[in-house]
Image (cartoon, rainbow, N blue to C red):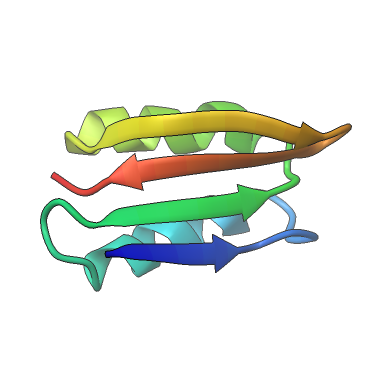
Length: 74
C-alpha cells in the first residue's frame, strides 16, 4: 500500500511532524510518499527515516522548491 501525504506550503518542521504521524498508521512494508516544499525537509525527512530504520526508496525534486520522498516502513 502507498499513502500520499501532501504537505505543500507547510513550514518546517511540520512536514516532518506530519510524516512521523502518518507512518504510524502504516504496516511494515507500506510506503509513504511525502510531497513537500520546505527546504529543511530535504535533510530532516531522510535523516529521520534512516534513524528510524525505514528505507528511502525514491527521492525526487519535482519543481524549483518542491520534492517528493517515498519512505518504505520497516
